Length: 92
Image (cartoon, rainbow, N blue to C red):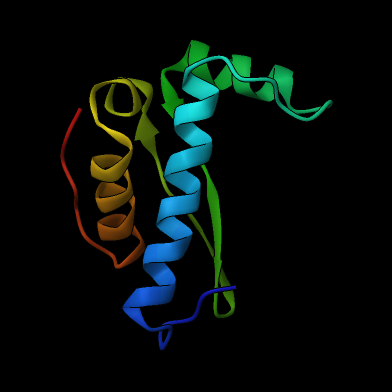
């Protein structure tokens, strides 16, 4: 779990992992049983909403699948990192 005091290095590791998973999902890599339908619904809606636990709150990050598709994994990680820090990243 990340907190408001989590060093940027740790947040970067989290954003790298989320970006890697998202690129795998976008490429159609197999996922755990039970979430395949959620991923399909997410793609149908056009928005991926990962949940990030921070301090005493849960933060939902909304990322359009077009953004996932159009950015490289490192660019996607930077996009997610900005959102995790409360930024208003606007790509897509």
